[in-house]
Amino acid sequence: MEHCHGTLIRLTKLTDTSWIVHWFTAGHGLIKTVAKGARSPKSQFAGKLDLFFDAEITWAKARTGELHGLREVAVATTREPIRGNYNAMLLSGYWCRLLELLIERDHPEPELADLLRRGLDHVASNGPSIRAMVHFEQELARNLGILRERKQAVSALRETLGSLPPQRAQLMERLSPAAEIPVAETETGDLK
Image (cartoon, rainbow, N blue to C red):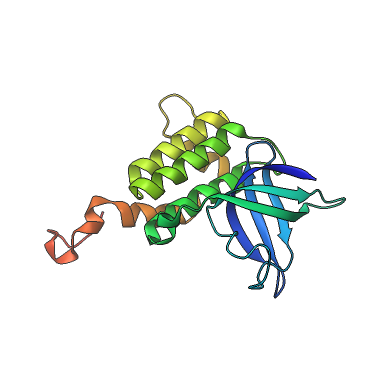
């Protein structure tokens, strides 16, 4: 059995009763677990598996493949305010997607796990912002060693990945100050 603290970054339906639960952990990096029966209301996992929850988890390592068996979950933080704000969900999901694209499975990344926890805590407390998005990208690129002098983090991430997740463009549009001004009040009617 393995045990660690993790942040739930994705839930995928496996069967009518089970989830594949993606975690980002400091000691094991990205891991996938199967929560058998978790979609049942009487499951031991009922109320314990939702996006951006932090939890102490116990799992049985798979003999073959990458799907480990989730055994226990003790929720530490729910970050409930994120789920009540679409832009907060979009920003938090964007960060998780970046990590999934950039980090190898089962590879320890304590600095990045801490960055994700701090970022999600910030969004839960202060709401989403372009400043928070850019700061996360900056720290991520710096930690990965892809940030070059005189280059923005977003450019370094785009070069590394080929393209950025589509949520970024949505976030730029939704979180920009111009998005708060009704179209009728802008001079040209164009939102920048």
